[in-house]
Length: 90
Ligand SMILES: [Zn+2]
Image (cartoon, rainbow, N blue to C red):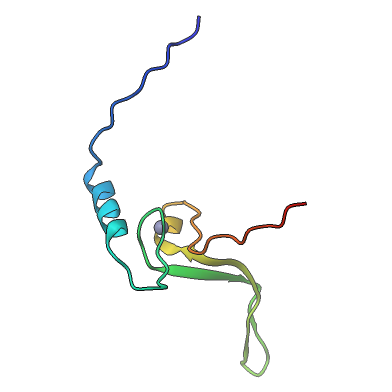
């Protein structure tokens, strides 16, 4: 027996989601990066394998995550701030 699918009526967003939608709808300066999921403007870059040599000089390792939303990352969501480049068709 198959379950009959029905449309669920749209509900009002909870207070947290209402704030996110309001922030995302606010006008932003030209060129500013903003998360499409939560509206945050905080981003981070994660680097793996950095080290300090014997002279005390810092050496940067390999970038493993770049330009990701920090607030989404805290909630376990992967949200790039920059759209991925289109890949050529093969
Ligand atoms: Zn976000």
